[in-house]
Image (cartoon, rainbow, N blue to C red; front, top):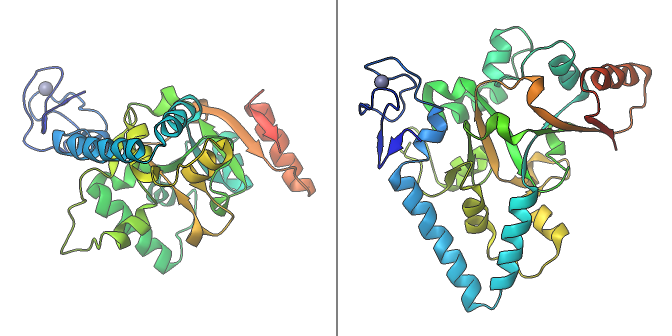
Length: 285
Ligand SMILES: [Zn+2]
């Protein structure tokens, strides 16, 4: 980890960097790791998250649900994955045409997708910038899941990503970034994101416990899954822990794909092509 205390330190030349958001060492030019991960790995962030986590454990202890929280902890750690949901043609373009899956802005620049409507384009640009500044253009969004269900409001195909492909470049945010901005009144006057609501990949369990501890009252595994990710097709009511992944994702990073049974001829051809490119990784649901 290149962050020591609250300072970014080059792991090659061991020099301290002037800013936490540098991606290359200002002395030797070496890469400093994913900036989103570095930013949430400062002492300030880690301490704030730890305090929220400790408060959750204390609450569980005082309310007689310690064992239940321990069971959630174990179930989460064993089953958690990052998941991306896409519409079938977008998934097909990713894996069959051998394009990497990229942030919205990069996809528009590459000509791989049309610009969104003015309002959606403004919203996407603001969100990327509020959380990440310039490198927001290189952040790919996913969600945490404890089963094979993802955010169906973004597409019917669910793609589980291999942990090894993202664990050094993924950070998590307690909720959807748009609702987080609203909930914490972030704007151009107030851009500081409160500490303790984001984590690196290693600490995502602490973030999940800090968010969900008051809901976890019994050992129902289906509820555990629902608490971590709820989506019934309406983006307004989606509830999830957001994953921010630095840089594009190639199809080699895919662990498993879940696709609803295709109906039309075109969709069947798409699914067949995806199956051929991702042998043994496609499940028809
Ligand atoms: Zn250096």
